Amino acid sequence: MPIIEVTGVSKTYHDAASDRVVRTLDKVSIAAQENDFLILLGPSGCGKSTLLNIIAGLVPYDQDGGRVLVAGKPVTGPNPKLMAYMFQDPVLYPWRTVLKNVEFGLEAQDVDKAQRRERALKYLRLVGLEEFADAYPRQLSGGMAQRVALCRALALETDIILMDEPFAALDEQSRILLGDELVSIWRQVRRTIVFVTHSLTEAVYLGQRIAVFTARPGRIKLDIANDLPRPRAIGAAEFNQMVDRVWQQLKAESQAASASGKKAAREEILLPKE
Image 1 (cartoon, rainbow, N blue to C red):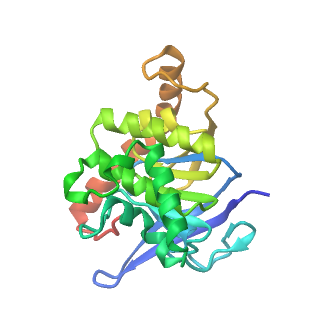
Image 2 (image 1 turned 90 degrees about the horizontal axis):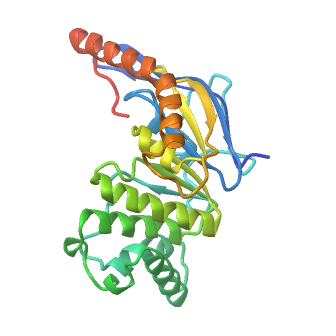
């Protein structure tokens, strides 16, 4: 049985100010197995992040027959014991040390002090930040801050990690290095990862499966198995072939999203931020 199962899920927003209705997702169905590394890829506004938030229990979906099951149970709200969430921004508390930032979610779950410290240090060690355990966020680079955020999500030791463009704000080199660390950890600890990105290269570099979305309203256009051997070499012939294959599916949707965005701007439609 899939650990995540989304069946016929839609999401509609109503803008009370303009009395306009915007359908972000339309009858989306997708599943993830244990230890899957599933990429959600699509043009801006297609509902990728909305779907991630629905899976996380942060956003309700339309009650029109769709359903979301996680570990075989309906999602009715956030479940931090089963799912960790990593945002685009690190969202570190500036008054807490690196170690205490990683421990934060464990404190909320009443994990005892010794176990919190042991877990936090274990994951800081995995990303090469153990020596910065007593540093504060202001003393970290952007890439280091994201490593801390990754450790905070991993330290919860949930079966599922949801990641919403976590490396988008980083330079290309940092994205690749963090991606390498994420894949290495994923292969060691065996978690299910659902990862939202706009980047074709990142999708092919990281993902075991790539779900390509249509333009809004988002639907799953194609679910592509990515069987490239690891470690993957960016720029290698087989890598470029997979990027091109994914791009052929995404290109028309990106063009449609761009045309829709221009039309919306002309009509001054207020759309929800994905």
